[in-house]
Length: 373
Image (cartoon, rainbow, N blue to C red; front, side, top):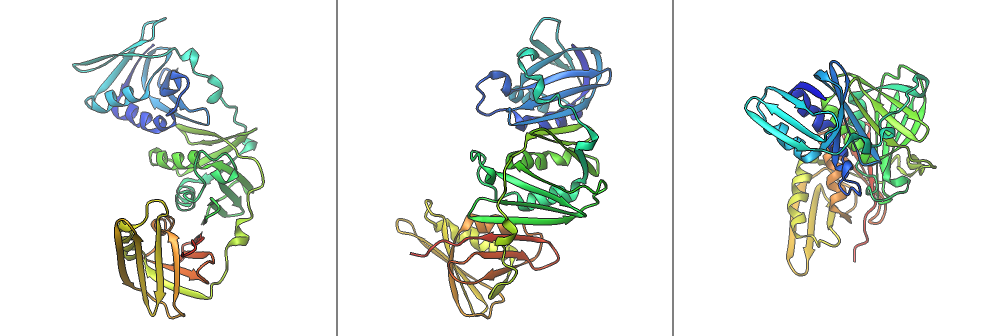
C-alpha cells in the first residue's frame, strides 16, 4: 500500500471518524481506524464501536492498493503535529508496520491487519427507495436543540433514542428521559414527500451533529436497511442501529397553556443559575426558584457548605410560586434556546414546567420539578 495525501484532508477525515472508535474495546482492532485505498484518487477511513460506525472518503494520490488499521490516538497525534505538507503512507505487502513521512519527519506505526476489522459494519447496500433526502442545516439544528433530553447512552430502552419524524414539510425531533422532554420542529424541503418516523440512538445522532461541520453539502440522505440507519453525504457515512418499539406519545404530555407565565432573559438566568449552583448538594443538584412580583429569586443550600441566593428582574404578575428543579435540566434547556427571552409556563410546585422561546422558534422543553422538603 502506498499513497500521498494532503495533511489537511487527512486530518479532517480522522476528526470525522475517530469518535466512533471504541473506548472499552474487547478487541484492540476497535481502537484503530481502518485505512483502505478505494481507487487511484481516494482512500476510505472507517471507525466503529459496533453500535456506531463512521466512514470518510479522503482525496489522495494512490500508487499501490492496500489496507491496514492504525491506532486512532497515535494517528491523530502524528498527523496533527506534522507540517501542512504532503504526507506519504507506505506499507510493504504482508507487513503491518506503516512508514509515514512528511518532509524531514518519519514515523513507523505498528498496526493490526485489516482482516481483523469486520467489513459488514461499513459495507451496506443502499437502495434509493429506502432513502429520503433532508436539508442538513435544519436537521442539525433540531437534533442539537431537542436531542439532549434522551436517557443516558448505557440505557438500552427506547428512551435512549431520539425520535426523528418527517411529515409533509415538517421535521420533528424529540427526546425524553422521563424527567424532562424536549421537542423541536423545523420546516424542511421534503423533496421525496415521504413520511417517516425513526427512533435513533442518541449517541449516533449527537456524534453526527459534531461531525456535520465537515459536510459541505446542503442536504444529506437518510437510508434504512433492515435494522440499520445510514446518514450519507457525498464523502461521509454514519451507520447506526434503529431502535424498535412504540415511543411514548410525548406530544400529549405538553400543555398548550399554563395558568401562570413568566418571561425571563435567557442569558441572565443562565448566569444566575451558574452562580447559585455553586452551593447545591452534589447528590441532588437542586436549585429552588421563587417567582413573585416581577422578580425571580434563585437559591440553593448545602448543610456542609452554605447557601447562595440571587435575584433577577422578570415579567411575572401571577400569585407567588416556589418550585425546585435539578438545575442541570434547566441549564441545558436554556442553552438550547436560540432567543433572547424564554417563556416559562407554570402551574403548581409539583406540575410540569414548560420552557419556550419568546420568539418564533418552534422549540419546547418540559421539566418535572422535584418535591421541596
